[in-house]
Image (tube, rainbow, N blue to C red; front, top):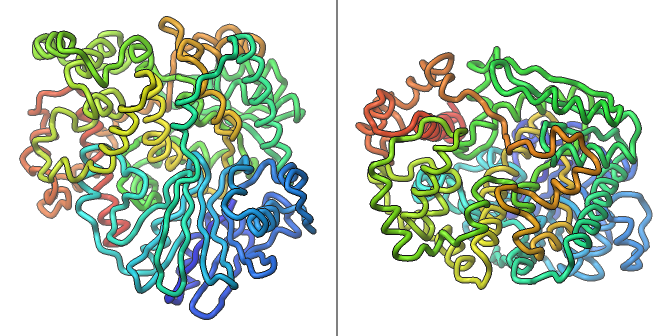
Length: 613
């Protein structure tokens, strides 16, 4: 795992770049220069420590690479590549030299890399299927820069804010694919590659992988056959992610089945596997359930108790790390968990992607029965007439909240249904946001319309949307920044190439059966996990956001969002923010907390990332 950067027609400030990317690669730093071009690499040495130094050259090609190709030795054999080191970086170079962009389809891994071709005078940039590894670039036709983190770009060149991106953040809760908060800055989309012509700095982007293709296919496998294949694919994915490291690999272990299965299978390949469980004072404690798995597989288990004693001191730093306005408050425990795990090792397995691939969220249950994106006239009218008379839900965990949100999304349809059923931040309060909603959401709307028009089920649409939107723009961003802030590499077996290309082809009832989510994984869990875990409900990091806003973070948040100079006043009615803070807006406590936190995250980004105060 590493940090990469580069430029054309711009001299990189290497000391500043080193400061901004040090946490991503503290082991080695090196720069390659050729005429108007520079490539810079910060290395976190994990595989082929002795021979994997970068930038690496092969013939006319020079590469800087962030990530891991777990099957790179298999790729060498399949493609007949003759390499001299055990480095996956060299595999990429040889494969690209021989097969061009087509080589990407062979890679099982997480990656973002840039290859300079001296002969063709062009740069090739690429990202992995799910978008685990980020790549941001600035291009104004005169200069070109790229980097692994947005803060690294902002540290090199003066950037101007794109107001439309801020509106997208407020309306949607995330920045979709290439949308970034600065003009001339984009994120290379997941599953995409780009060519940069050095002569005129023209950029051409191509989508090389799209999960939609696989939702359009239908497997004829029986449930028993699918179960056997799923087990085999997951075991292979775990094995590859352990084997492809010269350093010790551990595992995050929660009380859920995703990390439980990963840990169980990892224990078959590594004895005395180090496992890590986190619990928070005053919240749901998953440690007892996790310990059942740890005991069953005799792992070297660590229970990490997070008290948030220094939250007031750390919260601005945590949010600043993202380089974008980032609303997801679970970034806080993710930061602390990663910090503690790094004290013991450098590479860790996790269960990321399991919910979005196998159908783990509770919202998939109703979509397995009915396509709420296209509600019929009677359903929509009935929901519209009923909803105004419902008491507001203040507790997201109870059954009433589930029914409340179900009726809410049934009365809407289209993109509004998606927002209501997922992040649900400013839904029903968007009248207080000043911008043009249609313009801000144009890219998200286009993506939604394309998926909604496809001949797949409502549940498949939801899974596809969650993979392209929530997973890529929120969850994977969260874990990349949280782990790499501490030079910790997170590996996700459930996002392996063959899993991503097989599980979407399975019928809905293999994933959601009745009211049970992740049916195929729960069935597989019966072979590997204690009974107590198998039917546990989905839980994320359940942090006490409402309590924080009324307690230890109250004064800090107020100082940002209620300030006469608050940046958010350019985008949200000031009176609304004050009324929301003073509980004069009719809304649930959970939703109030999310809205306030979203505004706070915007303010912190503006002061700390843009103004650098």
